[in-house]
Length: 114
Image (tube, rainbow, N blue to C red; front, side, top):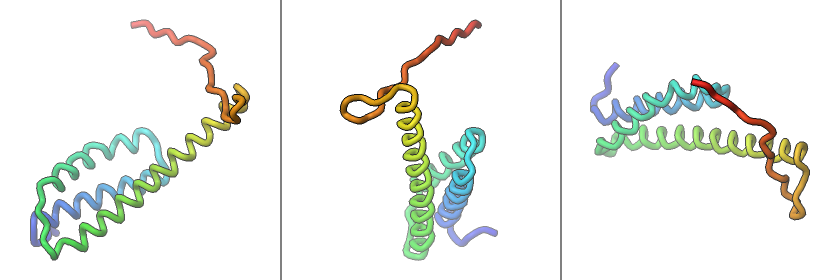
């Protein structure tokens, strides 16, 4: 079902992309996240070209809410990973005098042959 305006179509497509991304962020995998990139990039270009009118304001506000929710999930995921990194660094390397964990030192080499 098509909307009355191309602008609204672009907004609705972008909102659907962000909603799908948010859903994936709740149970992420690298492959699933990579699958969203082309659609999100297309949505970005679509949104750059619109000139919304008053009737599209509600959809733009809903899109902004979807983006805030996805951003919050990303931010919390990053904080979670950083917490684990500090915990593991402290467990393996101990602490510095200032109370922060010492950085992990690489214990091996990686060799790649072509």
